[in-house]
Image (cartoon, rainbow, N blue to C red; front, side):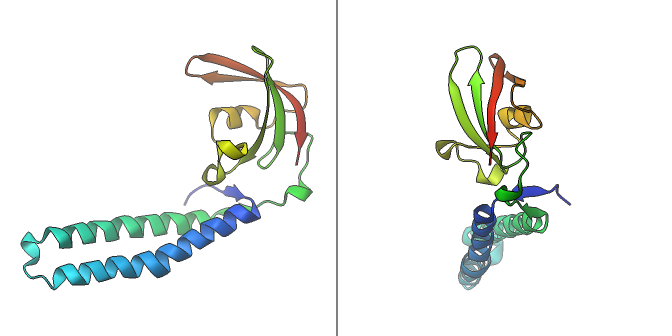
Length: 157
């Protein structure tokens, strides 16, 4: 069993849509490839058949993983969140103490992370470092080229 994952309603809907696509479109497509390759004769020397069977195995593994994610998913309601500390789905305004640069991130589940949209994973080094911090706290985060000191300026939903 995997650990709990926290999703926004939109993120959970996207996960469900992807799983439905894999089950209703991709699974039948891979099955058809296997049947087509099987019809070509000797299976012991049939590379198309082997490739199709491997693709089926990978697809089934992905479906299983996604089903596990959904079974352990918790949908977060940002309107009910406590803003006294940084949690999953908190939007945090921080300042890099080294260069004074201010950044704003929303902490999300790994599957919803999108840096272009300002969404970082709670399992990323910065996300882990910010969890549980309050306004005024400084998160010391170890990164490949040293330590990053990020001051929490504001926590919102």
